[in-house]
Amino acid sequence: MKRYPIILLILMSSSLYLSMLETCDLPTDPGPMPKNLINVTYEPGLNVFGVLRVDGDSGSSFIHVEKALTTEQMYEEADIFDTTATVQITDSLTGDVFLFKTIGDTTYRGYYFNDEFIPESGRQYSLEIRSETLPTLTAVTTVPVRPELISNTLTITKNQAAFQLQAAAGVYQYNCYLFFGEDYLEKQVSNSGAGIKTITIDIADKNSSPTGLVIIRYDRNLTAYLNSSPSFIPQTFHEMVNTVENGYGCFGSLAVTVIEL
Image (cartoon, rainbow, N blue to C red):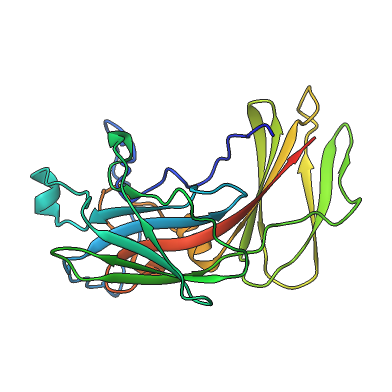
């Protein structure tokens, strides 16, 4: 099966630097100042970004492990990656434990993988990361069920592609990608409410027929992370979407369906 380049958050991590403009203008009328300030006390800890993927492939899930740094440490170019941690995923139903390990490729420094691990839809998994010097981080996710089109609902005309999905428990967002070779159109849909979801994608501007459809279901954790405001400062975290205990970052899951057209 041809593998489509899924535009996910897989290569995202809290160490990504967002490009800054060389110059910026301050607003002349900034408006009222906030009435309340949120005081955040820095606590040494791990900063993680982990994703369990149900996509039919083994080894595609990953855990990215870093150290949360102070501003001073960042400017001193301290090493942010933790490559000696013990990373494990536990199946909450069976109690099976899966160890994740680093690999030799320095491109993936700080990433932990298990080549044989395949998460199961609808199953709850817990994450535990033990560090030599920092508190043990824990987190939990319930893996979504892989999305399925309702039979015979996919239609493609000159101007529009449409299909129907059955809403599923434990799913908080869909991202749909309709591919035209290497090009694609994206549609994001909330999973709020029960029943059937009818999804339409306008293709009037395309000069060719679609070649594939990719549908992704996200759990609550990844949905919150994807829709949070990005930071321009590396090694920071969004307090309102922290989905782990005793540390910082996000641990979540997604399910992927690929349809050849």
